Amino acid sequence: METEIAAKNFVIHASQDRVWRLVGKVILNSLPGMEEVEILDERNFRAFLRVRVSLLKLTMRLKGEIVDMVPPDSLVVNIALEGLRGLFRMNQKVTIDITSIDQGRTAVACQAMAESMGILSRGMFLRQARRFAQSVFETIEKRLQDLA
Amino acid sequence: MRTRIPEKWDMEFDVVVVGWGMAGTAAAVTAHDDGAEVLILEKMPDGGGNTRVSGGNIIIPKGKEFVDYLDALSFMTTDRGIIEVFVEYAMKNGDWIREMGGDVQVFIPLQVAYPETTPGAGFPHIRGAETVVKYNIKGTLQEGKPSERLWNFLSGLVAKRGIKVLTSTAAKELISSLNGEVIGVMAEREGRMIDIKARKAVILTCGGYQNDSQMKWDYLPVKPVFFFGTPGNTGDGIKMVQKIGGDLWHMTRLSCLIGFKAPEFEAAFPINFLSEGFIFVDKYGRRFVNEAGIEVHEYYSALTPFDVEKMEFPRIPFWAIFDEQTRRRGPLSRGTAGYNRDLYSWSLDNSSEIAKGWILHGKTVAELAAKISTAPKALEEQVDRYNGHCQIGRDADFGRAKEDLRALEPPFYAIQLWPALINTQGGPRRDKESRVLDPEGQPIPRLYAAGELGSIWGYLYQGACNIGEALVFGRIAGRNAAAERPWS
Image 1 (cartoon, each protein chain N blue to C red):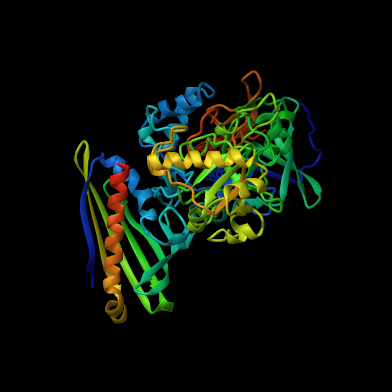
Image 2: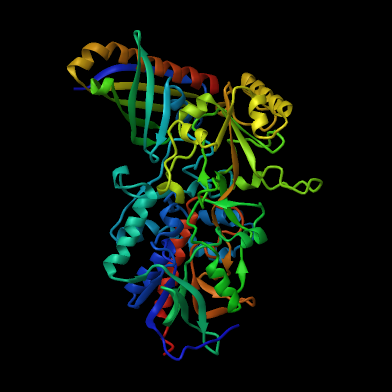
């Protein structure tokens, strides 16, 4: 069952091509605590995500796969997160749609859907997952606004 | 010119292909499918050459305007007629792969590293650049990295046809008849010389000279220069052609990135940074380039200035200075391509390489400067200046883009970098029929060449064109060689 855990729509004052070029660079830098990134090929990467959940400092394994990319219109990434020795597992589909409004303005729509979460993960971590995804989208917006 | 016709041949084939990578496979398969009995000679224990450890991308242009683009890049070093033939065939590269039972997918990477391979044209401002599309062999990561998938596909074509391959067999000389026709190859196998008769033709596809120190020093514009690919490319084809009076072209040309060279490894490691927190400085601690702004295959061009007072290349070697966030972000050498890919696994947080002394570190810039023998004050001033550019979001010195700027924060790290070849481009001059020419422009009978050995890339290089070109002129050489009438 898919559950939307975060969404954000905003407008960037730059062309669609420019926003597309920036998105690739901004995404990795918008994930706080993402370290030891391994670029496996042009569509797959994995990394460690060091995050704080309440008072806990967690290290999670992250696997990312670009499942669809249509430059300069859209990007869909499947992200698998695993932590606490397998206790926490979540698959997210993150979609970023980039649409030209006019020559100088581009609409960006970000959405994160949780694709599968165990009952335990849902109970314990859904709120944190929502907060984390929302903060990532806000960081992406801020960075794009700064760079545009 | 030497002529030596053996009294007795050890082996006999219609077509002998020297070197087994992309070009050798395309030539051998095409000649075989046109009815020739083919032998492939490969001096290394396994085939693949640079193809096997490359990025695995193949150019398939989407329009004939690609001719204008390549014509501009060639800067009059390659006849436009040859480029036209290349483009005509390259547009069918995908069809050929599909006819052979494979398939391709468009290469579209996210831009996540510096320097990075772009998915499109390396020189997007040039007319025809919009026709550049790179592909690789369709498949998933589980089926291998792009170049592994490519080599699995190519070697499968040879195996399926039962084409004879002699590995660990090094071609040493071309054998010519009294009238100048190439009629065979002398090769070294298991410690003895063997003479192999080529009833129709010989096709040279044995790569460039990236692992021949003397040739590199003689010809290339940066010195010294290391390499990423196979150690097997030692200029053998060039030397064989010189011995029989062939002409050479494009000898000063190269496809050259930056890399780290560890003494215990024959090849260099390609180096990329996964975060913006890095700069490059020369031997004297001076920044010298927009680190994120050079076309990746032409990176050497930032390193060529020669100081005639000091009689040195002040940027060879140079240093990358980076910070903790960049160090932790990911491995400096990603292992997607290069000969060392299967020999060494770079640690994800670069800690093993710090422990080995490949990466140096210092709590302050001054401490780091002392370790890399650079004037501390000069390096401190440079880092402060760069950090100032980051604060205002504008690199006043080299125009590094706003999105590529991030101030360096302690602790600091340094790694020594060198120009490092993907491959050399020079070799025997050839025409659009893949025939090797003599200094008067006349074809040397029954001798063909394709691939990096005398590639058509005579000035600037567009990424994915070496494999694309090997596929095109390998096919042409194979077809023409098979069509020759046997000399005996």
